[in-house]
Each structure stands twice: as structure tokens, then as C-alpha cells.
Amino acid sequence: MSALWPGIESLRDRINEIVRANVPAGPVALLEAPTFWSVGDNAIWTVEQQMASEFGWDVRYAATTKTFDADRLARVLPPGGTIVFAAGGSLGDVWPRPQQIREAVCRRFTDRRIVVLTQGMHFRDERNLEHAAGAFAEHPDLTLLVRDHWSETAATAAFPKSKVVLTPDLVLRLGPLERTGTPTTDIQLLVRRDIESKWPEGFPHNESWPPGIDWPDASRYDDAWRRSEARYRWFVRLRNRLPKLAGMVTTGEMRVVSQLAEARFAAGVAMLSTARVVVTDRLHAHVLCLLLDIPHVVLDNNYGKLTALLETWTGASPLVHRASQPDEAMGIAERLVSSSGARLGS
Image 1 (cartoon, helix red, strand yellow):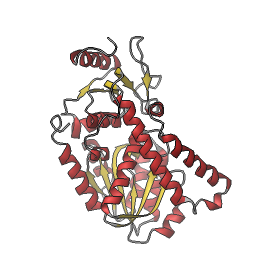
Image 2 (cartoon, rainbow, N blue to C red):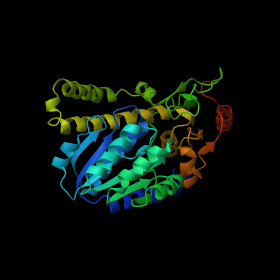
Image 3 (cartoon, one colour):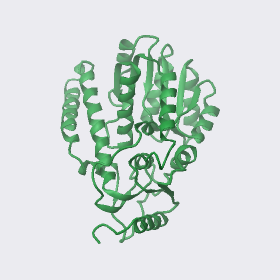
Image 4 (cartoon, rainbow, N blue to C red):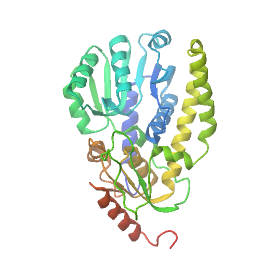
């Protein structure tokens, strides 16, 4: 991998330097843990657990968007502590709930430092952007780490009172990864099925193409997540039946959430490892393919976040190829397979 992309170590060093400079050792609240099958978000949370351990974060409180409790946060994180929001792609109004929590926290916790780890920014509605700007402006010590030049320009203009720092995507901190299996398919078509898809009526499909899959399908490639999933569901049932116990079981539940995140990330790696070439419009599928040394063809989502990342950090890698339409992407993938030797099963 290092021969193909010599800059990976410098990106890791840059991430470490920026995060250490903005999230000091000491009391921390770490918010927005994932509880869903986005391999990218689960990889991010896994990286953040590593950073917490390595950087001396004393995590006094952690929560998902479903379990977040502002009153409990106020009790357990002392003034002077740091509230850290997980990285991802939700700085905006595409995914409303995380943004609503950020804005509420900025308005209430003005005596704690707030850091939003590396995000892409996109607002569809100007009114929502104005609302966010008002909330962010109320906080005297808010830092936004953003993962591309487009987001940096937009955030600097919209949030002039906040500190904005261009930072590589946190998953790049993992560095080169090893495949966890041998390829069993020539081309893997990994495409979005959600509101960020460029094809809201469904991804176009040709009978000669492989069936399309998305992150939740990673569950079929590795079973290690099942035990953590069962334990997590136990905590969910406990919270629902005995809500007064929710605060008491938070630490145990979040430990299981972190274990589940690591297992789901591993399942995603297992899924990608089965392909010789990947075609995807998933940003973190692109990043993980880079780290796994997998040639891949990138299509964009419906607001350009993959293009933004490629133009800022990763586009120079010879592993990545760009396409604007599915048939173009599959044509490139077919040529990559043909140029690499005999097809599987031939």
C-alpha cells in the first residue's frame, strides 16, 4: 500500500496532530455512537475509541443519538471538560437528529469546550443553515474539523465565530489494512439505498451486472457481530421497560455499542475483501478500498461529497477511478478485471 500511496503516513500524522491539539487529555463526553449498519460510521467510532485510549481522554459520558441525555451530561462532565461529537457526514440537514443535538448542546453547554470531529458539511435548506449558525454563534469555544475544501469554505463563511480546521477523514488514521479473505467475485457493486443516493428511484441495473449490495449486507460476510448485537438488544429492552434505569446502565451499554461497532466494521472489511474490483458511491467504501489495496470505481452521492474528498485528499491514488454514470463505472470495472488477468471461475 505504501508504494501505491506514499502519503498515507503523513495523513495519519496530520490527523493525530490536529485531534491532539483540539481535544486535550482529560474529561471528555463522546457523542453520536452508531447503532446502525453503516460500516463507515462504525469504522469511525472504532478509530475514536483508539484515540480516546491513546490520547488520554477520560470518557465520563458516551451516548448514541437515541440515548443522549443532556441532564446526565451536565452532571458527569465537569465545566472545563470537552464535549466531542463523532466524525461522519451529518454536519447539515440531510440527517437532522445529530445536527439538532449539536445545536442544543452548543446553546446549553457554553462552559465546556466543544469539538466536532471530521465532518462533511451540506445544508439543503438555507433556513436550517441560518438556525445552525445562530446556535453555533452562541458558543465561545466551538471547533469544527471538516474533511474537504468544499466544507472548509462553507463552514468558514457560515460560522465565522467558530474555529474551522481542515482535517483528513478519520478512517484514514487506520492506515493500510489486510484483506480478511480471498476474492470470490470479480466486481462488487456497493451502492447506497438511502436519501443520499443520486438515483432516488433505485440504482440502474443491467442483467449482466452483479446484484447491488449496501452496507447492511455486510452482516452476511462475518458472524462475529451477532453476540454483541444480542447484548445490545438486551440493553435496549431494559431501557424501554425500565426507563429509570437508563442512566445506571449507560456505561455497560456503551461498552457493548463499541464492541458492536468494531464487529460491524470487521464485517464490512470482510465484504470488501471478497472483491477484485469494487464499484461504489459510498465514501467510506472508497476510503476502505484505498486502505485494503483494492482497485475501485467511484460514483458520487447526490451532493458531491465523494468528489470533494477526492479533490482534497485521495484522488491521486492509482487505485481510484472516477465515473459519472453507472454504465461508465461498470465499463471501467470490467476493464480493470480484464487487465488484471483471468476472471474468477474461468
